[in-house]
Length: 261
Image (cartoon, rainbow, N blue to C red; front, side, top):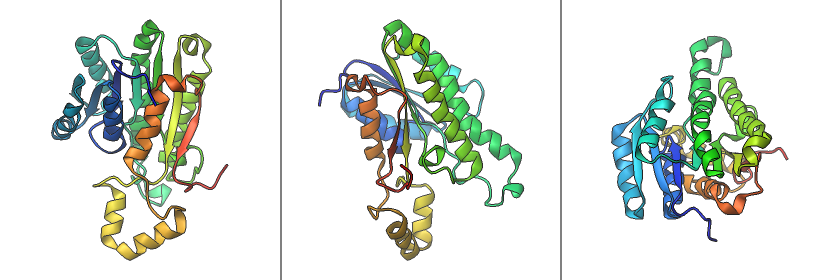
């Protein structure tokens, strides 16, 4: 399928590893120029090396989204280097394992930091990207949320709250006629359990491989976790010209893990 992305310009936040890097690679494979940001210069360098073979224009910017001016610094770099942006993938986030099982014992700072890292980062990047999309009269904003931000809202409350806010942000913007009638769409992608090296799932498997496999057998119909590439395939479609009528959707990518309709 021709996705119509060749020559367009995209920013993937948190694009140096996991779903972010997989999304950046999938967009680059379609001929899309890609900017990525991350807290780590070393990770950005490694990600850029993986993206270079696609032969598209690349941009990488060091940014920690817990700093209030991070989105502006990234977008200033995009403005200076490209002067245009048609696609934004709000991928940066996390915090699903932060804090403690006991809510009262979890510092209030965890709530605010998880909200900033997820919901407010999406707000800040989206606000800066919209003028570019309006000038182009075409745009795609895709936000990576979680099944715990809507379908299966039983995660740790600070994470569920932040991801639900991201879902609500996309849904609210999708109904704003002055934006969508200029060819801009807003959608959420809600992954379930995704295997990403160096994250909590790998730690669980290392601690007790047999218990980890029993959990997969019991909770995941496919008896495995998803991959970043499987999420990225959905992201790329939503960014494409083929997805022009998909607006305000919250698409679950979890292999049947969630139980709700």
